[in-house]
Image (cartoon, rainbow, N blue to C red; front, top):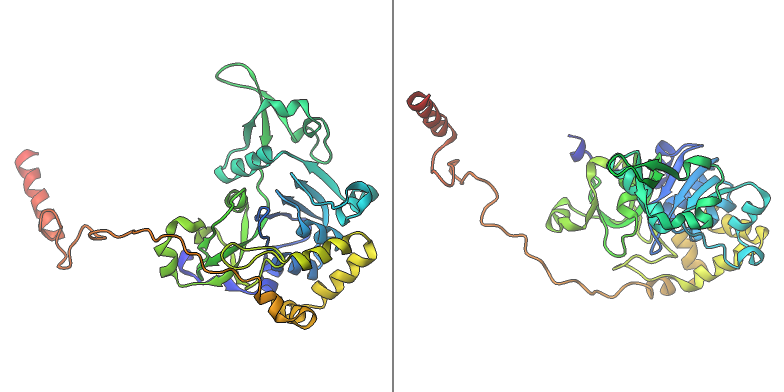
Length: 348
């Protein structure tokens, strides 16, 4: 069965097999944490002409742009630290024309993902956006950024956005099993919708756990196994961002990235040291330990704070008892079939 097949692989193999030049790529994570390991692998493999969907373009969108991976972006927020004069990879790319940006509100971006997740072709959104530049200013999407249609029920004009169905979603979660059931907790944003709206999904996780752990906490599973194409075990896979329950944001290292963004040459040096010269996440962590000492990384580890356990226990999990008899009538399947035949003879 598809759901029982192990999908565990490496970041290198997953990106090589599933992400291609010209794809629409969505970063599933929103604000807290990001799939840093997978983003770096996309850069190392030199993917080009990607359209990036990102609800919160933090350092991930910046380094993808600096590496020349993107030609288009759909977002609600991009860091662009320092604004138009402070300098960032995205700002420079927008100014030199190598990157086109389509800007949405958080609500409208999410509406596109939710429509894609449910198989709709569009989603109605709130009318107020028509009074803003988000509605009037358009780049590569043109008329398709928003469309006004007539409601078939009221005859009134309604504002809509098109569904988004990116080619690939990359997303980092706390844990997953080998089949692909991905579990996540914390600020959700568009994480689940971005993944489920996509045609293919690559999940990286802090740890791969036994499926019994997943079954014990089913409410944490936001992406089911049958939708996942690859699972990558990547401890510290969101660093320098945080992962709830595992580690805090590395503010020092994050600050160094932001400083490097100010100049193109500094950003290129950062990419060379921390991405191109580190062929894997383990190599990245080894280099971090060499430069900053492993104790700095260990100090970011989260202290245990488990939630109160919830019971999922039941009296039994099958309508049949240990002797193969129906729990309510006390009969075997054969006896039940005979009973049904007798009733059909009496009342047929």
